[in-house]
Length: 319
Ligand SMILES: NC(=O)c1ccc[n+]([C@@H]2O[C@H](COP(=O)([O-])OP(=O)(O)OC[C@H]3O[C@@H](n4cnc5c(N)ncnc54)[C@H](OP(=O)(O)O)[C@@H]3O)[C@@H](O)[C@H]2O)c1
Image (tube, rainbow, N blue to C red; front, top):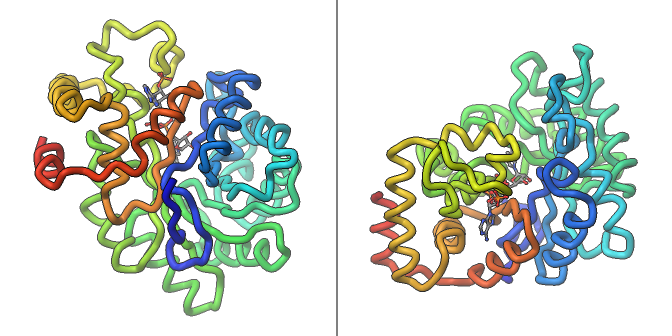
């Protein structure tokens, strides 16, 4: 396992992180615990969750109910010091107007709930889940700064921010002497490359860490899916994952078939190939894998220090 600094901070994180969006939603507690243990034993030190992750996302009301944080909290006993615990705030967690967003009201209330569920006194990385157009950024940044001063949060990060939003936040933090976001958490994979336009150059220029989510395109880059109409029975898409649907295009099915061939030529499977492509992008600090089985962790760890042949990078990127 490789470790590097997260952005300009001194915090060292593994180049693979464990994503827990499916804990308590599609993965039950016992299986979640096995995946957690397998990851920590392999040297993965960054665990990513959110107050939003849990069963509630699949209910008609569609707000977060916190089961992922609760499971992590129960299973981190005796292991807390080994890991960098990252969670998020901002997506809806209730039906009332202040049950979402990045106001001081919401952030201060939600951090307490996350600390309780996570069974810890501090969060290592507290991330704002997405930009909140209704709340002044100064209010969000000063609420987060207060949490750092209180010792409830160690570092702050943002997720799904556009480059201009991060630039504005960094400028405000510098001007008002507030905490800075040390990293961005954003979607990036062989099939989704929008980040290359603005966010990646911004992170490189400002030395912000980049945590990549959905490195396997929510499972599309596992190669399990061959058509939209024929979903493997135990797959996430069959369990109701909506956000994989945009990946199901004819062009993507063709690209996946070509990537599969390139992967076979390298004697690795398509999941490993897709992950290795991400890990070989110099801007990426860590890829957050959404393992749904302990074996997925083992396969990811096996490829985590694979050096890509230069000529293959060109071929894969051009597809
Ligand atoms: N900030 C945000 O807005 C945001 C959004 C999304 C995700 N995230 C974070 O990123 C994490 C990862 O996202 P993700 O779950 O979309 O990531 P992903 O790694 O792209 O997709 C995970 C899915 O890929 C399949 N898979 C993974 N490893 C495999 C392997 N070795 N072989 C075959 N199939 C494999 C599994 O599908 P099956 O289960 O179908 O087999 C698994 O559920 C989340 O848990 C969360 O922490 C953040």
